[in-house]
Length: 256
Ligand SMILES: N[C@@H](CCC(=O)N[C@@H](CS)C(=O)NCC(=O)O)C(=O)O
Image 1 (cartoon, rainbow, N blue to C red):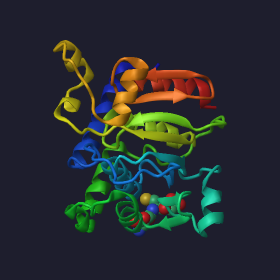
Image 2: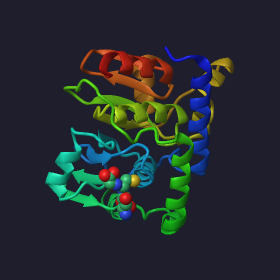
Image 3: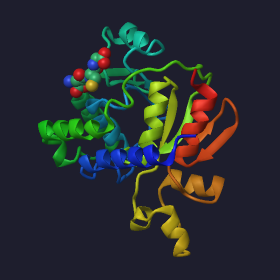
């Protein structure tokens, strides 16, 4: 298990990344229409352009199947080149419409147009500014979630309850990316003020917490509480809360 100081520093650096996102990737308001099949995103966790797309997905409460394509990755990168002609990320495949797209701006426009039922937030039009702050959000992570590491493949995608700006979920997504493990994100953005309290604070206040967001409700039904990230691994039947435990689990189970 990692020693506590590096772990605390890592969380602090992830929090710095969240602050650089300036509040994006936290709140959610459901899309007008949910896709029947999850959208597929070929992505690098540390890539600023991919982050913009993931922020939009949390904003729209759209689940997404992430196929990690870190630099040096040999599992999904070649597939993207075969499908779209080049290794450029993000790359979105929508199995519901057959649409496939490069370019973060085009992907975001598509998501709001096809599923949003509302225009993209006005701030999306300040694209240069948003891209710059997404670059700033990558800096504190120092290259995490960008380069592949040897791993055992997973037969089935893992399932991660997450929202884009969660500093703890980010640590898990980075590791999944480095290990090239595909995972389905079940979006858990916040849609009421009670969601903003940390689980420990809710417990200390003995709050009767009734989430209204669909996957938060699902977590309560499944586990009795809401804490993010939460990982389900259908390959082993294991389920874990707590980013530190999840990272240990991924290391022991998949890292080579
Ligand atoms: N204009 C593109 C830029 C995408 C881009 O430059 N992505 C980088 C990663 S941050 C990339 O795919 N580099 C090629 C590689 O990693 O092999 C967008 O907004 O999607």
